Image 1 (cartoon, rainbow over the protein chains, first blue to last red):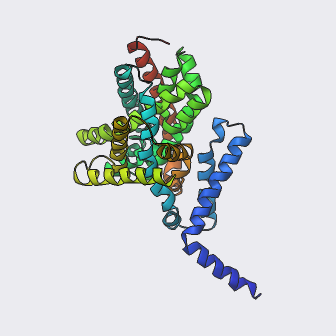
Image 2: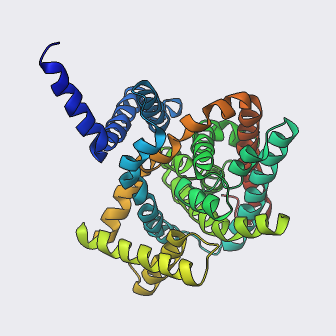
Image 3: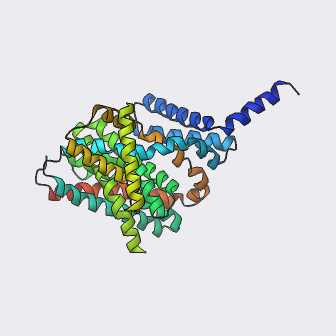
Length: 242
Length: 113
């Protein structure tokens, strides 16, 4: 036995017992995701969050770290989701100035879009034989992830599954928005932006900002309104349906 | 930076208290969001320090849901056995949501451009 081995083992025990390992892993995986995203010229397929999730999931599986143990350290990052949700008030406030009497059409479109989002996802998955645990994850999936997880906790479905579906929805929306809008002949930027904000929340919004500033403003408004109204209406609708 | 973070945390705390005692069905941070929004409306502008923190958060929002989304490893066998249903539901749903939102907006809004 070499004398170094127990020393390395001791360091490992020390590190895996502190939140440091999970924090470093989370932040460096995100950093790696961002680097890949930049390298691919911000192609929506190279989504940095998706890459980071894949890295962290592979690493904790490879070193046999239970998810609960990882989360114990990473919960400091997770806690900030609530703070980030409160901070969404700032982009919404800035978006309100751009409303110019469009509030009624926007609210009507939001309600129609939000209902379509839940009904179509739950309907299709049910038809194809998914169980109720999976169906529950679809209820809040078009709402921005931090609010979606809060809603999931309130309606007793898995916040984790909801977050996974929400992130996937955001990525899909960011990739597909151009084709959908071109297919239905939608030309005005504010309407395109609002639609992607309602359907694909934060990831769709950052995509909209990178295409056109007016689209981005309305996308963040769509995301914000969907988040606030969804937090009120989705738990009520679920209670009503039961 | 710190001044902005303190203000946002105060609204988060306020939201949690309101949620706990008055509106248990709505997540506390969402109430905090609405309260902060109301305060910004009354104030008429965004304090520079709050703006700074909010921008930092919105640019790195993705980082914050990694810990929760990594929970996908616990659901992996379950998700894989329903992969087709989940994939179809997510793709069709996001396309339908975008199309319906945009079409309703175009039908009701008077100014097309």
